[in-house]
Image (cartoon, rainbow, N blue to C red):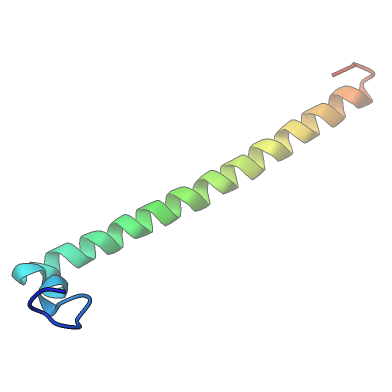
Length: 66
């Protein structure tokens, strides 16, 4: 276990050696960017799928085969 005894994560970890006020906002910003990237990709995929379905329906209505 080490010198900390039963502590799983020491307070030194959370303070990041005095740089916590710089490190934790960077982690938060990275999380926001990754979340936005996931949301944006899913939204783009749904829109592209809808466009493809509409194009296929229009082609079928015009008498063309897909």
